[in-house]
Length: 185
Image (tube, rainbow, N blue to C red; front, side, top):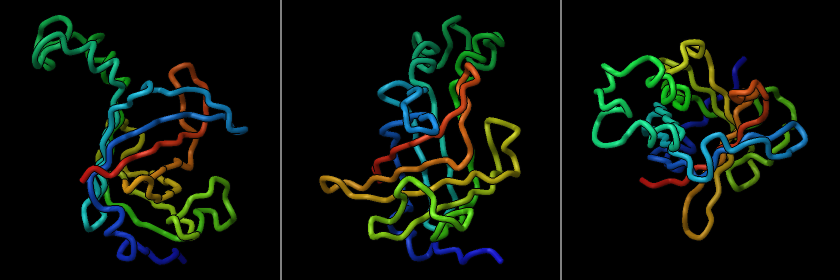
């Protein structure tokens, strides 16, 4: 039997627009492997009051290389007319998905998981999102599962998400993602 969805309990804290503050990939021992989108990642997550999530991440270096001026790529052509190689440079640095999330207390595997996730009051949280649309076709219809940590620092609200599955870097290295978000709306 599935655990109860506790979204109604936390929706006021989680619903809104979040800006990526950091995106890191760590080894199983905790060593920093990479910051795939640099020191100033470009990303937003919008979560509706009813739990519909829309997540967008982009490598800002790849995005800026595609914008010499206006809505065209380095070739000067509009995006829909740009060559495959030009589009691929940007597309490989973009990750997007959306769908309804369900929020749970405890851990996805029912065991004490590492990472100190929670609501800031000692309750461990995780969510799963059934993917409706994704920039990666292999994610369509699947579940994206994240351990969730909510916190407040200096009067600002933050959320740390730790994907349950390993993330794969372009060189094939696998590691654990840690994404920190600041609530901006």
